[in-house]
Amino acid sequence: ISQFKNNWKIFEDYLQSKAQSVVPLSDSGND
Image: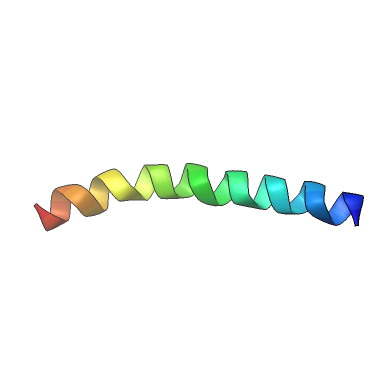
């Protein structure tokens, strides 16, 4: 379970960093 939690944290980090890269583009396109 500890390993799974660690993997999830990395996965969430990856998603967040990806979202931060995509959100600005989406925001610009929406505006």
